[in-house]
Image 1 (cartoon, rainbow, N blue to C red):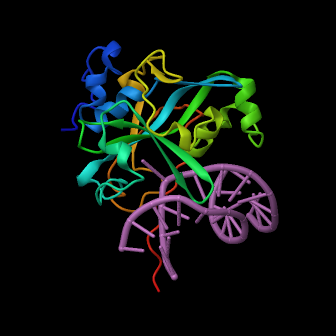
Image 2 (cartoon, rainbow, N blue to C red):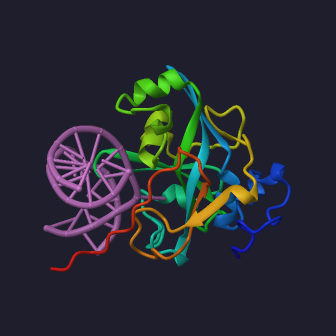
Length: 218
DNA sequence: CCATTGATCGTCT
DNA sequence: GACGATCAATGGT
């Protein structure tokens, strides 16, 4: 059941958007609740925090684009665990991407964190993202967001819902339903028609859309 | 602004 | 052995 996302008045109290039981529910509802949330990461060099402006839902056995679609492997094991943990994976031989694990324990789903605005530790974020031309580019795109926050393999599996955790989620600035937009996921070929990408309208930290590439013919 | 392309390697078939 | 939930550089309009 997926209905309530983006429907006017349908999301319930804003304070409940990031409750653990919400993350454990339908993945699109969890994704909706993550918009406007703050992800804050401590490191020896300092703390960087990002307000999330763009996310994508990936849901278990019904979603052919999900890393968990073909069952559990060493890489996607965290997705099969309880909600509220970080799933970090390596792509294209050089980039890291971060997800928040959602859904009930044993039913793998996750929300990819695709974009956000750096709201704390901006100097540290700039030093990690030296090629960024402007501050809105610091965490605009999933691999950029991971880099700005200093997240890579060691962060895989981290628990996010404890305020004392070095990697933690906070409620941040909840986004009104009227500002939520939906569309197809970026760069996804399988199930490309599913509008499981959610973003904040008119936010410059939302990444550019790119259609999924179909397999080229031989 | 837009389109194209090389980089680079873990993961799964 | 092929491909990917990407990025940055390049070159054109």
